[in-house]
Image (cartoon, rainbow, N blue to C red):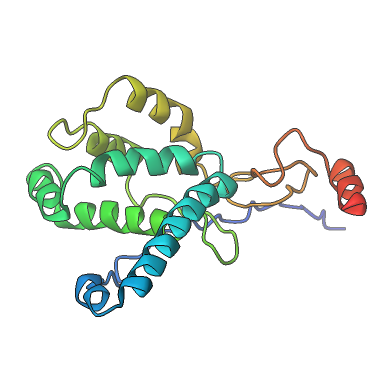
Length: 198
């Protein structure tokens, strides 16, 4: 009689990334804004401010690392023009690496965090952790010190980790929470109790 050997194969985890073929479009809003009436301009201004606040709240709901990641990126991309940053990265990074940094940033902003808005799958930088840190350390772009080091040290693992429980939002197979919606100290039976009351 033949012996049967059982082999447990770990499923291959495919990391999500923002692909370089994703289009980034310029929005030419100034011309359109000038055609609005004063009342329409005021409405657009108020709507834009509400959207900005709502976006910031969304980062906190997406993942532990999302608000800190957004803060790091805004310290970089909020200070200089994209063309200036690209120029300063030349020679230190190749064109593909530069594009990957920009596409990742675009993905984080458009999804209000590092999980896709639809489907809740995490996407990670398409660069090794060391190269991503090299980008953050370029002094001419970003003063990497104090607060920035603290932020990086607190989120760097979560930013690149994709293995369970990091690659999903919701409850883990162990019944523990994985996101700000379900924090890690919240158990499935507690969630069910809360759901019944609400």
